[in-house]
Amino acid sequence: MLALSRKKNEALVINNNIEVTVLEIKGDQVKIGITAPKEIPVYRKEVYLQIQKENEEAMSSASLTALSDLFK
Image (tube, helix red, strand yellow):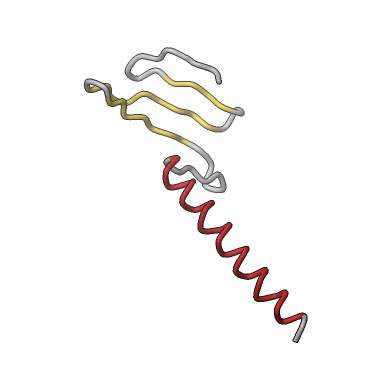
């Protein structure tokens, strides 16, 4: 993991096309802004993990259904 220090209104650039800017700092919270191309999804980590979990559940359910159809 790369750890960087940034102050309010300072930014960093990822892969030449994603910019992360520190917008506000209040106590232990930091508000950030992310500028990225529309084709690059940006999620909060807890949302991303939930999406991954639901995708895995759907895949295992679909795989079982497909397997049972093969043996009919």
